[in-house]
Length: 127
Image (tube, rainbow, N blue to C red):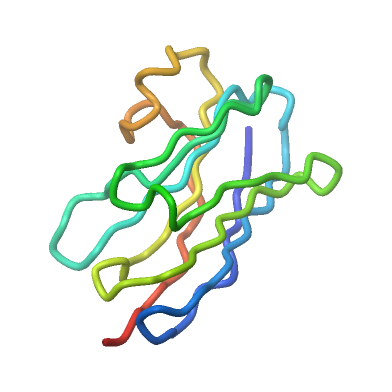
């Protein structure tokens, strides 16, 4: 079993930056991929980006490409999401997730591909 804890959310003005962290504990050896998702009020949870644990390959949603950066520190069992040039539409509850079953990399944009989730951290971007 894997436990995920996000931190780093907050309130920022449009154009600003914010960094999120996701600390992973438990059976980390069972993780194949990790991802970031977000959910705005009244909307479905949407894909932000994901990282393949073994290859380090990273994929981003088009709406954040060029502005958001995913990285990891294996020694600290931590995944990061650096968010720059933030927009009001980036507002939402940000979740990190882990996939502990070997689903195809192409499915990593879907919430169903992940079986462990953190509790989320709120990001609010004011205009």
